[in-house]
Length: 330
Image 1 (cartoon, rainbow, N blue to C red):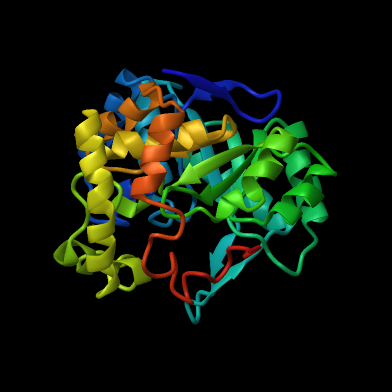
Image 2: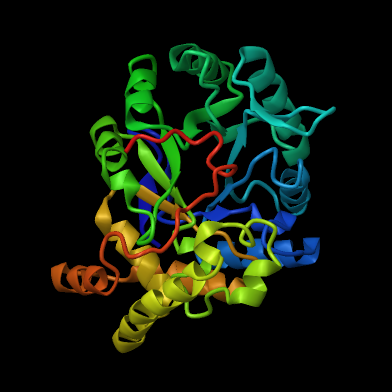
């Protein structure tokens, strides 16, 4: 599989990674045995990095990965995140980017993962009131302490990235990016390319809309996240299924799975992008990995964007509540 460097001077990673949120029931139940089978398949496909967070299943995802690594050894490069908190009394979400919290949260993640360091550590959501320069100094200290190989931020604006990069090189910014979410092209992709930062693209197949088996109303309503998400409620869901039918038809004409074509489009948009699809299904993972081997030229890219032009999606990517935390910049 093609590789891409993490940051300007970091290690080489497979061109796509695996997001491990799904193994904690975000889109449906998953057993530990299923997760282990999925991880084994990822290794067979040449995928060498896993992306998780301390809030995925409230530590469950990290614990499952830790038990897998205890059995298989250090076979993946690991990324995890911290910074999202919940008030124990009210359940309200808030963000803490203080040195004390990030250090404590990282230590807890390392214990769950069963490792003494991770390759990449993200601030999962930026605490708006705390200067990002201060947070970057904290993260740089964790690099110097050998607890993390590099660091990044999730869902920040290009202006925030530039401020952080003035303090210390930022290896990665994680953001939703796909044929259905093009906002990163309005400054974030460009900033990452200029600074040597990798844009780690989550939900690269549009939460299933850009696959050959997109969620129908029944599947969407069974998901705690999708049931309220604007793109998966009617009438938007039917409109989005109709729109993406054009993309599925194009993929079939080209003889590839729709998911593979969606991933390939991302990889060919910018050499700074590393997609991290999430799935519980080893067969779906193989389709996604196929995208890393597709060679797309100018004509193929044009046909894809003709099928799904900028702005095709019906509905916002988040509800008002889901937008709490990500930095809007356009």
